[in-house]
Image (cartoon, rainbow, N blue to C red; front, side, top):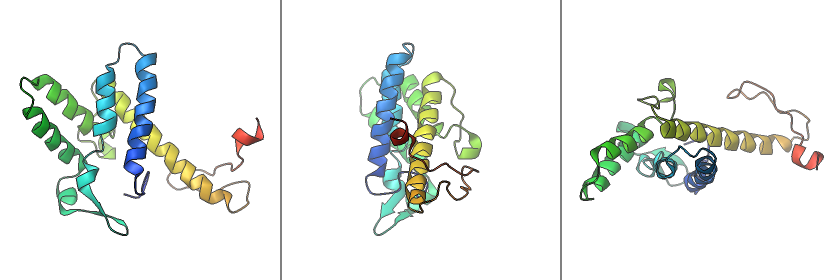
Length: 170
């Protein structure tokens, strides 16, 4: 709602970013199931479509407050998989686990911790992408100050150097 990708189209940007990262990992680590990685990138936050509404600002729907985006995505998995004749029950459970564990830690809101490589990677890439975008957004605003260092960032518990190192060391 407010931490990362909190703008119109942000969820789609986040999913596309994760898909690109998953594509790399699937080709780098040959033992990973590419389909499950792509599923995780697409479905991990899909419930946010029903969890949040947007008029002038993002707000939680009643369904979102009462159930949350993970439960809403799991309901969608159940609904869609039940329409596919012969859909494997074990695969349905695997898909739901990816969604339920994508925050990676219980104290981050996941009801389950990831218990296989693909679920672990979905959680790690979700965390990486959300943190990178959060830091980049913070740095863009801070660079407008003309200072060399940012204000203290409470979320990341540090100051950030504001130099553009990509440009500085071409």
